[in-house]
Amino acid sequence: MSEADDNNDDDLPPPLLRALYRISRLTGRVADSREAMRLFLREAAALTGADSGAVLLLDPDTGCLEAEACHGSLPEVPLPRVPPGEGWISWSILHAKPVRLDTFPVDPRCQPLRETSQSQLVIPVLDGDQVVGALVLESDKPAAFDDRLLAWCEQLTAEAARVAANCWRIEQLTNKAGQLEAVLTAGQSLLARLDLPVILETIARAALPLSDCRLASILLLSPGEELLKPRVAVLPDGCSTSHPDLSPGESSVGLAVQRRRQVEVRDLLRTEESAALLAMAQREKLASLLCTPIFFEGEPLGVLNLYTARPHRFSNEEKRIVQAMAGFGAVAIQNARLYARVMRSEETLRQSEKLTVLGLLAAEIAHEIRNPLTVLKLLFQSLNLSFGDGDPRKRDLEIIHEKLNQLEETITNILGFSRPTGEAFTPLNTTEMVRDTLLLVRHKLAQAGADLQFEPPLQPIWVEGNKGQLQQALLNLMLNSLQAMKTGGRMSLTLAEENGREAVIEITDSGSGIPPPLRGRIFERFLTGRQEGTGLGLPIVKRIVEGHRGTLELVATGTDGTTFRIRLPRCPEPEGG
Image (cartoon, rainbow, N blue to C red; front, side):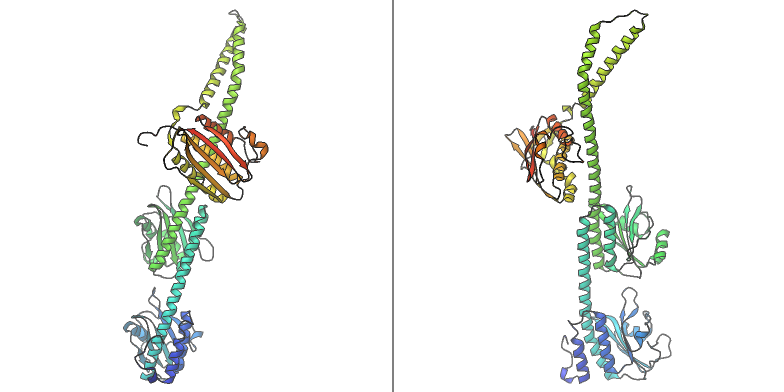
């Protein structure tokens, strides 16, 4: 036994002593509370000569007594729930006192567990000071239990309660460990994913077993925050189901988002919910609901809903675990949205790059056309052709002269439009510019399995330029480096000041390097060593850098990696910078 009894062990009758010993030995040997209760019931029945019996435990959600273990012929017939407040069993639990019935009174509320039973013994089962159930023993003979057997059963029940309490705590710890493991596993999985539908389904499926739920759903706020739209609703069997749209101003689901705290509903069908939500609860046979808002840095994103098939009171531990799951989900959802924005930004940059190339090609073509056009115009003027007013060739000469001037004006406009102007240049903090660029490629780095090292300088280095163009140049160089590292690797970016006059940016990767035949021609347009390449990336980078009065050079390349260096002239730090 786990502690000293009021009576000395030597004063206990041998049958009781042996039964107590066998029950106490269960501690540490049996972790399943149901198995412990079954063994305890067998000992109690053998000690008292009972024909049948059961251990009934209180369901904290319904208040009813449910069979935890049965003995005799009872296992063949499932025991009905014992409603609270009915019969001597409930009276015994309510008052924490044993009950002995030598015969059953003529009262429909005091029915035996088995029709042939003539007498009954009820002993409350306590966990500390709280009654959690009852031991019920029945005999087919009247007055089968005396005060001596009642006292023995009280001692057995007290010892069994200590064993069961130990099992319950082990089970609780095991459940909590499993829940925490599920949360951590889900968190690691979530933070590594960038596809929003997959993220939402992962959250919902990971939350389902936390409280033995019947349905888990996630609703996200629409862009205008006018509607909570379901994005996933999953069942334990792996299937999906439909979930209605909800307004933030209706139902407990919307209330959780508005109040920014969890909302629990014990009985969905007995509360004022939206008609669509009640219809779903009836269709899926749902009883209780826990709504957990999903927030990121104060911004509402949506809500995680857990539904149970039976009335359930969610414990504080369950609520905290679900809240942690929602927190992981919020970070993962935000990461997925940022990734989508980065992809859109990258596509915009790519389109901008194409437009830049088109402008560059147009400028080159215009430049090549202007020289022969100038020659043609001078030769035409030197001919000094003149025709009379009635001669139709006079009008032809006028049209030719007009079209030559029109062509010259068009070419001048193209060249003027394509030429970068210094008016768009402003003082830039190169450290901030580089950091903003790294934000655009961080997901690309993660996907490629590449590590990035960047040590910013202690003091800001200022240059004069166009931030978007310089970012485009850096982005092109970094994407080229990633494409050279097929199976991951290392990329380092350094920023330093040289001679007090220049900002120097170096990008180094551990890729396969530039093929020797291409090294001397890498800045030629349309020259590429990749099948999917356009051969325009490095020429555009060189054009942008030179447009900022800087230089771009290939420092080193080989099988162990490549290094590019950008030099830009410094400018004074602006006032207030």
